[in-house]
Image (tube, rainbow, N blue to C red; front, side, top):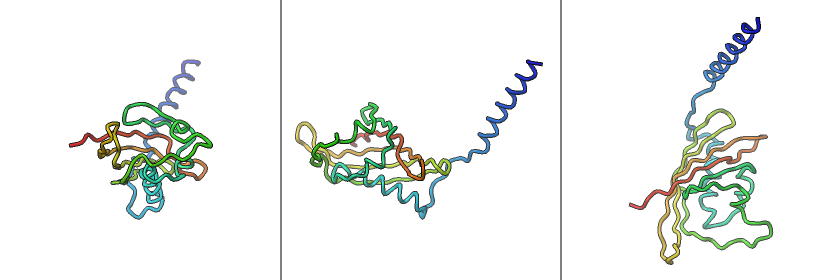
Length: 160
């Protein structure tokens, strides 16, 4: 009897898991006129230009449990990326910051992944400017009606 119960429970769990996977929709690209996708892309634009023109978007855009991966491969959290309370605003460190492109892909009503590219002119340690292009993937989650970024992955595009 105990074996039949275990077997039945296992079948229920496996079958239920398979059924849940089947009912999950595949990701879909956002329509060009999707107002939420437009809002997410605007938030990305504000972040992409933040180093050239500091703004307050990061405080609310980035979730408290956020973890990002830098182009150098290190992990960082929200407290590590934001200025310390009471600190003077830093002078812009980059110029000509641009969001080159961004596309939103939906993975359900509360999860969106934004794939994009941005660029900026950076001054190196040698004092010379160079163009930096990043390709990134940002994951948004809607909690309590509020969209926030929970994870990012950034990659430098090598100069050609």
